Every structure is written in structure tokens, then in C-alpha cells.
Length: 85
Image (cartoon, rainbow, N blue to C red; front, side):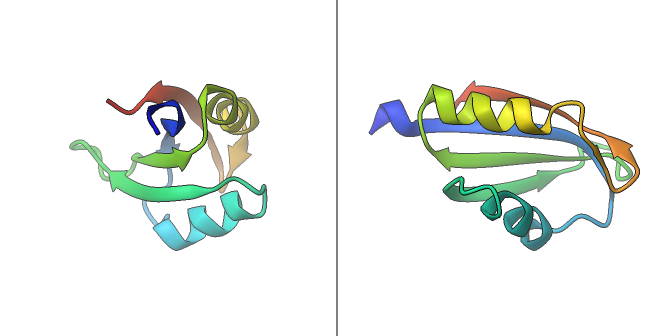
């Protein structure tokens, strides 16, 4: 359903991050993940994860609020929820 077609972007992840690490971290928080894509966009030391979620706006925003500003593996993370179009 389109209502459940949301993503949360998490940026400033460390270069050693893996989809498995993120999946484990997020699964601990009971959020259903559809897919995780890792991107570097020309800055290999700053990884961005695009996390596709089987949730609506409220779930994507909840993940955003939980992650945004969190200090994780020596880095301050930023996150935002977006509609996957």
C-alpha cells in the first residue's frame, strides 16, 4: 500500500557500517525493514543509509526522532523521514 511506502535517511554513518549492523540495531527497536541501501556520494568516510520501511508516516517519523542527533560509533547522526515515490 502507498500509505506504508516510507523511508528514513540516516547520514554521517562511519565507513565500516554494514547493512547487517544497521538491521540488527533497528530490529532491536521493532521496526519492520524492507530494504537498506548504503551510499557514500563521493565521501567514503560519511555513509548514508536509505532505510525502506513497511510503515506509514508515523513510523518513519518515530525512527527519525529516535536516530536524529544520536551519538553512535563516534559520530553524531542525522536522520529524516521521506516518502518513497
